[in-house]
Length: 396
Image (tube, rainbow, N blue to C red; front, side):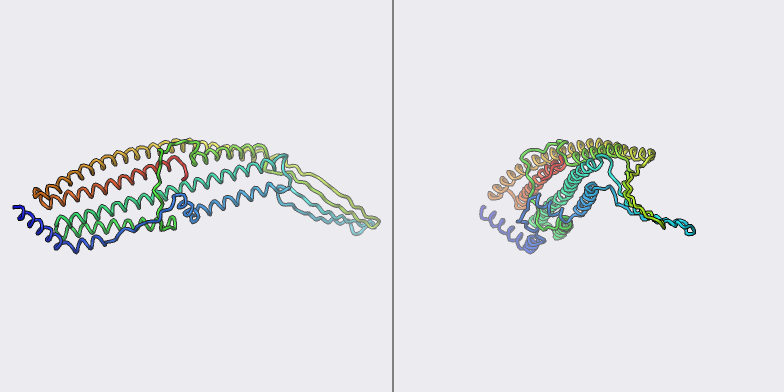
């Protein structure tokens, strides 16, 4: 009896190998996922991507504008100087013909302490620009993490589809079912290739980053969030700009220094002149500038309040996603454990001749699929922690 059972199992295995051996070879060699043995820290990936990002050009332009304003306040005069040359001629018919020549050099001056406070204002603008650069890096990091997440999850989908294709082959399904499974492998690999292209376009790298590990769960602290710091700095800059405009008029006093030469037929005379031109009036224009600056400050305050609510909501969403990923991982781990124990029992039953070959192959296929799902859920959990860190506004 035992000899007949063994011969029956042998014939089934021979039939299995003969019918689908070529398909097994094809599946194993079909579009293998590249092995990314070289992994780079996320910090290095972010820096490399930033160097090729258009935001870096924007940051350079902002620094150049602020540096130009800083240099303007460094100058002794508040604007370009001007020169004036005037010639006046007297009557030509009289015996005492006279002429007058005048050279005048004019230069706009700063208001009292305007130059000093203007330098302080531009220095504060430089610190705000640095926060803006950090904010653009944080936004770029989000894009990098999103593409990396798509890559990892799509690679898991590719592995699952390949496992399903092997399961169909192992279960002696018809050729149509195997080819349908291979078609799903092709579709998932095409999606993976699209994500790989997006990764290269964003970072310029073929290497992947290391999956970030978080020994402690990220916590949202608004005073440490880069977006919150930048918004708060914008409010402070708007208040300083309002104080600057309220204190100093746009029109500048002008210092005039000149030389006047008077000539007549009998004698000539030279004199040096000095004067200051002080603007008067213009209160309506000054009030409009103050109103505009005050409106800009109120706008920044409103944006800051909306940002606070948005940051809290986004962080709470990522916390819920992380908790959900943790629960799904526990469920998949329990399911994989149960299926592994079941397949072990079926293997023993098959060895004793108490279970059929299809039953054993189905059990092994289910176990392999469950283990793949556990790996995927573990990746999703680590990626959800990275999303929490992103929502907390902390750079790696």
